[in-house]
Length: 116
Image (tube, rainbow, N blue to C red; front, side, top):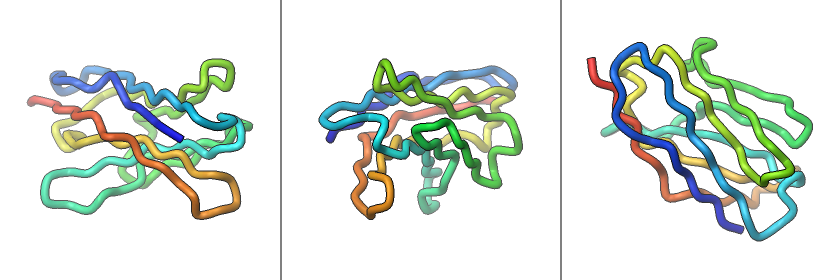
């Protein structure tokens, strides 16, 4: 299994950004997809997860500004981020977790920098 993130970059506070996570190597709909982020000097934290049927859960830090989605026909998960704040600056990682097991895979991460 391989997951590859894309879409990171530098934006100004208040702007939006959409991240993509391309999945390969298995049957996409069997995997729960998630986005996590790691700020400098901090532990990796949950941003959002989504099941194959579209059931989404969000971390406390999101506060309704982010939306996770997936397209099972394109083997891709997305994270739409709006009203970005400098505190959202982090490396964002995609995770694929096989339903009902501990088997999971991480991408290499994509940097998101929000300037004030």
